[in-house]
Image (cartoon, rainbow, N blue to C red; front, top):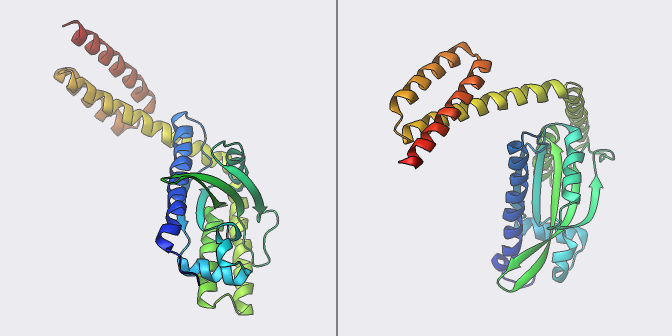
Length: 268
């Protein structure tokens, strides 16, 4: 083992993970703000532990002075999707980005591993801006469904326990579990539109409620106390009745009241 300062060595990878997480989370937020369907459910990331880096370097016969190029997943990003179809949509979004360079892709969904492992991997080169200048960092982006991730997490734990030497009966049960997980993904895809419609209805309902309550607070800001209190009472009644149509109309009334209050305030 060389005598490198591992804390300094890993700094660019930590920066790459944090920046990529922020950018990919922002992509989801942007799509939601535009009332578009967001194929990204959530994003996580991690920097590989030193012990794991050393173990992988030994297993792949990567010299210590070639770790930066020989081990591609020191920086790792994981993107979760609801549906298998979403995985390819997310991959398309990553391919067209200008802030990273695509190195290569591995499709373990179409060509899943014998173990049953399914996931879509994209290796990218991401430029990290350090105090010493720009530094290209390799990162692995894994895109998978929640069911695929559940299975992969269990397999990882078992491989750690058995030191990559799983007993055959465990391998067989894992393969069967993988098929069951993928069957669940296929079933969810078959009712995808119903699920998406239900989620969009929920988002629209939440958005109207948030808008109404925020705008009522805006009226209080303009010292329109009586008007705000009346709107609050009407909101409470409509909320109890779950009358979303009338709540949408109420939202428009409050916006008009806010506009009047703003004009009155500016004229004083």
